[in-house]
Image (cartoon, rainbow, N blue to C red; front, side):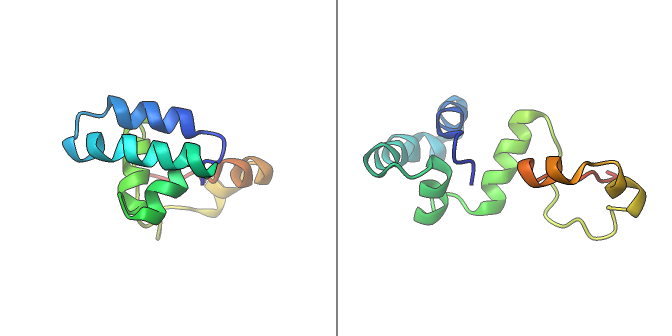
Length: 97
């Protein structure tokens, strides 16, 4: 997950004012540097954050809404507006809020 975005995630977590994140950033980043694993994978596999918390943090930083479930919000018309390659590359889908 987010293989080439470790530096951006490091900066995002470092800029976050939540005390729990301040404690995990140096430990997770050191493991990322030692193992070469993406920082997101280190954070999730170690259980520092669960996937939902992590994605909420990323979405909030980007000014986007995060939805745990997309049941009923993706219509065929919306799905048709997104090029399949773009959706696969970025893991995104259009939805009504």
